[in-house]
Amino acid sequence: MKKLATVFALTLLAASVPGWAAMNACDTLKNEIEARLKDKNVATYTLEAVDTGKGGARKVVGSCEGGKKQVVYTKK
Image 1 (cartoon, rainbow, N blue to C red):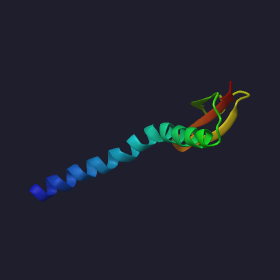
Image 2: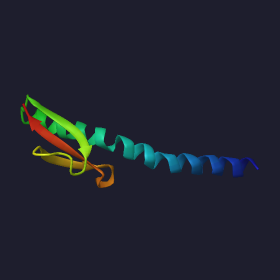
Image 3: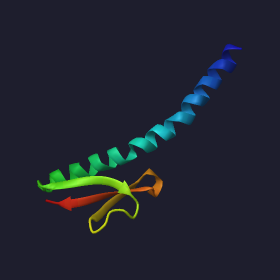
Image 4: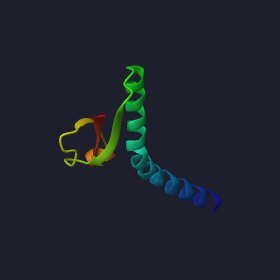
């Protein structure tokens, strides 16, 4: 019975990890892009995660959350 309970608990945990990872995917992507911009000595910019197609004239520099969101770059 303990083994069954352990397997059940691990299954629930494994099922929740992809959802948590997807939620943080945009933040992770933004951090990676910020690091690249910092390496290139780009100082004045903004990065924002927006719904796909809602970026307007801003440059799309990445996609996250399975394509539901885009990271857009704006130079200040």
